Image (tube, rainbow, N blue to C red):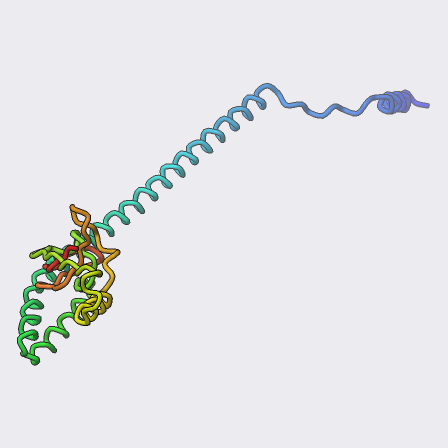
Length: 212
């Protein structure tokens, strides 16, 4: 056996007895680089969250601004229509007065005007026969109800019986508001119509009130 072959065999034997080479382990530079990348990622994530929060705040503020502007616009439109409707109330009063005096040809004009204004939100206030309400009625005159005759003195009088029947047929005033002295108040006549617009009293009705 030659010297070269002997050296090759020895090298092969040594190779069989050696352990496999170890895997490369990261060095200090690699660890520092990874830590720096993680730090940058956290900073970018925090910046992204901050921008997202600002965007959401600005969007909410803009939506609130739009709602506020829309509410102000509706209020301005309603106020303008209210002023226009109020300026036409004397026309309705004139139509009502002419109709009550027998000018039937004016009634159609008043009805057409009331229908048009009703579509805009105008409505009449019911007054006659209703309990007096100071928030929508203006009392021009107040009348005291006649005192009822004594039952024992007029029991045999047929006229009194008829009067008693008529009194019984009158509307019940139990729901009418009490006067300062405790008497009930009911509207008996309307001297000028009252109106509501968009749910609020535009003009109170001028009425006659009976107390008792």
